[in-house]
Image 1 (cartoon, rainbow, N blue to C red):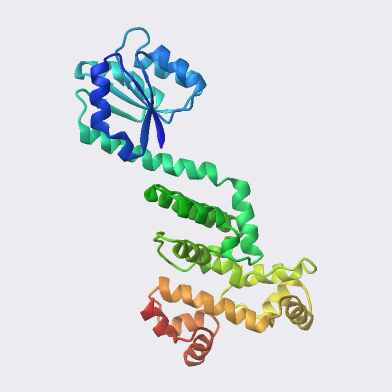
Image 2: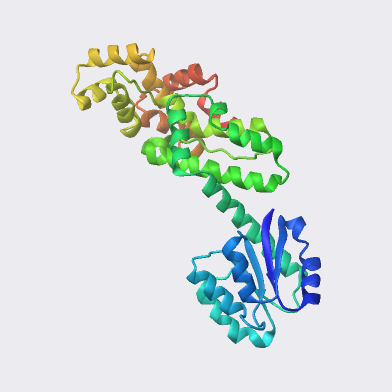
Length: 332
């Protein structure tokens, strides 16, 4: 639950506001009530609050005084202002202090609930950005690079899925995490975008989350190889994934200034895969992306990948995927 403090000197209004807002149903709980801005500020200095709902005109410190003191103390708590119509010009000062919303008394229940719903979504996203920091993203990408199973790096989210009482909030957190992981992969592997297959995410159980993570990681896990003993392997993959779609073994050898036979032997020794088979994997994966993201004809895709004979390309595609290119496009 997100924590709310209400600041108003009229006790009857406080009771009405809590009834209209239905805070608990919207993911908020009222933790404190203050009769003026000064008392509210003192409470803020010792307690964390996610939202302040405050009247503008109060004895002592008014709402503007409270907001000014908060910003000077670098307290960035969200604030919803409440005021009478005649206070509007006065309330315009609050714009300079970045308020979350402004509602006119008597407060309309729907408007208040709409404001709470929008704020909750924003707070959910902020919570994940704080939870998934740069070090965590780097660790996840390292797991992906080492081709580790998704379960090894999404365990915390699976635990959250088991214990979640607010499913919508969890979904927002997971969506933000997936976006952060995708962005992190793209920063580490600029070629990733060329091999990212389109997909939609609907997270409602453990398997759906695991599948989504595996889909995001798939291009790296399937197409990128490393070797602690032989840096040449990573250079081969980097070149194959960033250069022309018609890439060949000779092109790679020439670019890396190594003998073609030595290159092929080294790659097979370190990865267990022949360099020729690896380039087929790269081209078939690239073909999948082109089939799903363009309206190019089969012969156009075949030629783009260096296959002069579309029928031969179709046979290779089917051998690798179990489907012809057109069957793959139709079933997607």
